[in-house]
Length: 92
Length: 406
Image (cartoon, rainbow over all chains, first blue to last red; front, side, top):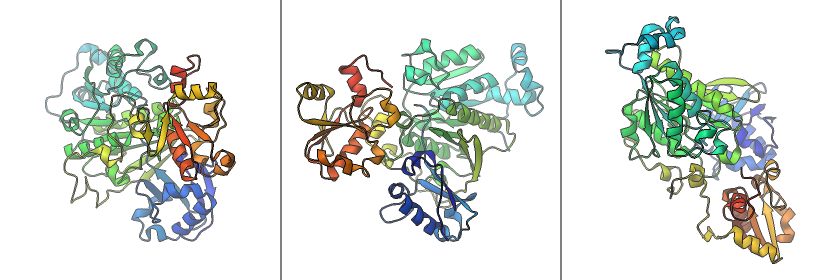
């Protein structure tokens, strides 16, 4: 499935804006993603493997935190994941 | 959608004002009453930089009666690539003074209230309380959380905008019915993980795009028209020129706007964001990224001055200099050192195996990224790593004045 990578994290995906990895649940897709791009791991997950609280993940238009299965939610190949990290830029 | 301002005794418009706002007055959704609401409205722009510049200018042009400006900075030449409220003639002036010149030039009927200060937990509630809408265009996480919490505590809508490189976000937080910034991001990223605009760069027109979206939301909130971005996050991608909105939910466990709040007064946001208090007035990135100029040893990494590095190089001492900036920065100015961008140091550390026991001096633009890289090298077993304090900017200042600064 397609994963949209936000600008701040593209440095860890070789500049790619979208990447495709296979998987049956959100968790499996993320495992595959961080195997493919290991440097992403520390930016997305805590050392205990929990999704970091300043990273939001949307499955299509929905925040996975509010989906019934959360990270275990089943996904199809036609679904899209979007990673939305905090950005703070404005003045400088 | 109710208006954000109280409708009692709206101020009258003079004939000159009626002529000026003619295109609003003939628009039924604004009309005379709407224009009077705009005149009565008080909007606080937090920051007069990339986002605050177009935001404040359009609000001034539209006839918002009172605009408050919070900024403690002065205008720098490098601001002018995007901060169109300032100009070449006002470089060196306080940003609030510079902005006032532009705004009053655009609309002399405007009342500008200048807050030449850094917004803090101690002054935020006092500053925000007199305004109807707050527009957050700051550049750092501490102030984002501070503005959010203050807006929720005071029940003021927050027209939020944020940018990074080619990407922007906008929403309206802090309303009773909608989510707040903490519902979206309960916690800030640890310092240094997300680069600032000063580190990561920003496309100059992007804050124009996002700042004008904030202005649009502000005007809608004042007039009580349309569908503000409450409960929605707008994502702007300037390269793909795509706009997406995602649903935001009010977090029932939100510590500020949830039914059982645990944050009922402003807290220490520097501590919350894991950064040390800024020691002096200066660019906020420096405070956040802990540019480490004055400490001889930081986290076990000796901080070497540019003078000391120059001396070592002139004396042909055995020192290996490593540049951890990005390739495009090298083209602007460089010390001729081999380059591995900070994000790749960990993976490419093998390329430096031969330098493991040599004296290694790491440098970047201002000294923050190179500190990070030096720590990685130290962890990888390098025995003699130091960080060039102040980076290539200090080199340009103190050693080679012909070198451009960026």
